[in-house]
Structure formats: C-alpha cells, structure tokens
Image (cartoon, rainbow, N blue to C red):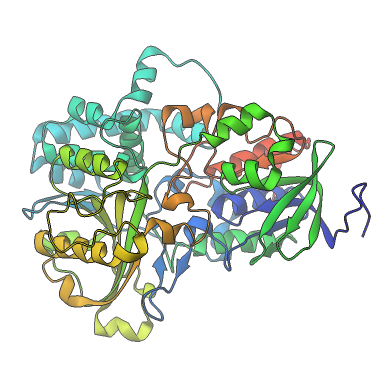
Length: 540
C-alpha cells in the first residue's frame, strides 16, 4: 500500500468513502458505484439503515421499524426505478386507507387512495372542507412536476415571488384557518407539520402540511414489505453488485486532511483507509464538522454557524407486541389504515403540547402516531403467529423534551415520579400514554399487550447515534435551516468550501427530513459533476 506525505499507513484504499450507511449515504454510494468508482461505505452501528432500520425489539420474530414506517416522501424519488431496486428485494405494499385520524368521541377522518373516498370522509364534518381539500390537491397536481424536480435536484438560491414567499413561511395554524372551517379537518392536515416538530405557529408549517398530505393522497402511504430495513438492504446490494463494500461496526473517528484535501479516514480500531478521490458523509453536519474534520480545517464562520444549529423537538416511542387485534371506538374501518393519528380535535392541543415540550415538561396529552405494522404486513410477526392473531404496532409521541426540567406538573396526577431522568420515568410515561389511548380510543389495547418496549429520546440517540437528541429531522425545519440555507448557507450545496473533496449527503442537507433518498442522490449529482462525469448518462 502506498505511503502518503503524512507518513500514515493505510490498510486499504478506495476511490470514494461514504461515512454512514443510512439510506442517504447508501443512495449516494449507489450512484458513485454506478459511475465506476470503487466505493466503501462505513457504518458504526452493527447494521445498516440509520433511521430506516428494522429490528426485533419486543419478541423474537416481531419486526419493528425503529424510526421510519410510512413510505411517503420517497414516492417522489426516481431512485428505486433508476437503480432497479426491485431486483434486490425491495417491494412496496399499497394500503387502500393511507391513514385515519381518530378522535376521543369515536369520530374520525380517513385518507384513502381514492380522492373521492377521502372527500366523503371529510364531508362528515364539513362539505366546505372537502371542497377545500379537492382544490388544494388539484393545485398540487398542477405543480407536481416542478415540486418533484425541485426535491430531486440540488437547491437553487433565488428570490421567491410575494405569494410564494408567503406560502413558504405561512404557519400551520394560519394555513389551516385559511382553508378549513372544522376543527377536525384542521387537525387532520395540521398533524403533518407536527411530524417534523413544528408547532401550530412555527413558520413554514403550512407548506409542510400541503406537501406531505398531497404526496400521500397522490402516491400513497406505502409500506416496505418485510420492514423498512429492506430499503437500505436493497441499496447495499446494488453497491455490492458494482464491486462496492459495506462495513458495519466500523466507527470513523477522523477524516484525514492534507493540504485542504481528504486523503482517507481513521477508524476506532486504529486502521486508516485511503480515499483516492473523495469522502462523503451522511451523518449529521455538526458531528462531521466539529469532530470528524475538526475546527482547524474549516473556516471559523462555518464552525460558529454549525454550533448554533438547532435540533428541534424530540420524540418518544412505544413498541407493542399484541395478543389480538386492536378494537376501536371508531368504525372498525380505521383498523385497516396504514397509520392511525391519535389526538383531541383541536389545534390548541398541539399548541399545549409544544409549549410543554419546549418548556422542558413532559406533555400531558400529546398527539401520537400509531403504525399498524403487522396488519399492513403479516410478515412482521412470526409465521406461526398468523393463525393466533398476534400483532405488532408502534406508537410515536411527536414532541417531548430531550432535557426534562419538571415532570409531573402538567400531568394532573399524584402518582408521578418527580425524577427528571428519562431512564427513571419512561416506563411510567409510556403506561400513561397507553392508559389514555385505551380509555379514549382503543378500549382493548391495554389487555392485549404481550410485550412493551419504550424508547425515550436518550434511547433513540443511541440506536443508532444518527438520531441526535432523539429527533427525527436531523435539524429543526426552520426557515433559516431549510432550502438553500440547510444546514447552514455555506454547506447547502453539499460541499465544504475550504476542502476540495469532502461532501455532505444526509438529511441535514436539502431537502431535509423524511425518507426521500433525495439528499443522497442530489449530492451524487454534485460530486459526479465535480469529477467530470455526466450524471444523466449513467447506466446500469
């Protein structure tokens, strides 16, 4: 193996090294391998996938999607077709009912693959609101090609027209109030802003609601057969089919820089690996800049800006293996929904939850998202369990604090532990959530629980470590951390100005959170252009 001027010894060499085997890192690696580069992907966790992992954490054979479940934004991606991922084990299930939002009084609104059925569901509360959704969805259809093109291309900095500027910054509450009259419809569509940690009054929430709800209505809230982890597995198989290599349990401790250029990486086991042409990172931008590269190699303005990077609200998860099928207060039609959104029928509940979360209090009655994993995909539970009515669900609480300041104050109960350490109180809190869901929404839930596993934000941060502070968005979706300003303006084009060949490709970059594969594919476009390779002419 050749020696470098640094006198470091390199155990092996590759053209391109990808740090992090999340779905974006793997996507970027696929296109680099497709272009003929010898690619190595390094992952510190024991398995690939990042925020798209599937693991047996309740009982043997019960396969839970730890983070992502609904395949929504990814429906806008050309990646599966371009790479032929179906050849590598990737398959989608297309539920008829995309989601149902259930309320404590047993009433509900469902979104169907059929727009007509969705409108009829909304009409139960307001004919005007159904008409509003019809108009909003058709506006999206007129703009769909431009929207998809924008998502799947590097960001372009430009000055928007006045109306576009308003649309981009309008809050969820303002948007909901403008288009809908019933509280229930406002909550149904407003929940999509809560998905990415936005309160009703945070700027930008309205655009998020319109985009996510429209793509779901258009393309479905689909499910990856066998678990979301089969998406990164298919991407990894593609890389390997092109001669690339994936290494797990391979923690990168340093990107080795010489003369403003990356020459390789150092691993925790002491090995150094040579990067002949480039290094690209899908991990969060803060860890990349401050730890792997180091402040000495980056302009101080970038260092100061990245230190101010905001992470947003954390999440809390409850994974349940069930001995029976949930029975709802609502019509049993909702049981066939891909996901169940659970909340009281007012935006004020979202406001209260955000206030409690951001004040360091555990929310007393937070909105939750329940993923119907086994009902959508029976392969998620052991085959011998199919005839015995075993099931698997995940309940995700959307906004909780990472640092707890005062637990119990807003929970109106005398039995709550006042300890502010998540490890001491997470089981109590998960029991409280299950009690509320049982009482108000699913009367038999508590009695059919076989096994419960609870993840606090601190637990999420360790499984894997890419879930910084237990958040899902790899950085808050705020106006100054979105579009051509994500994660910070100097890094928005997937490059680091002071370094010749170090790139970013994770959801800390544009277009941001959610499983879209877009940051990885967009970064590959930039990288290959820099290498003089025509991305649009790649084959195979």
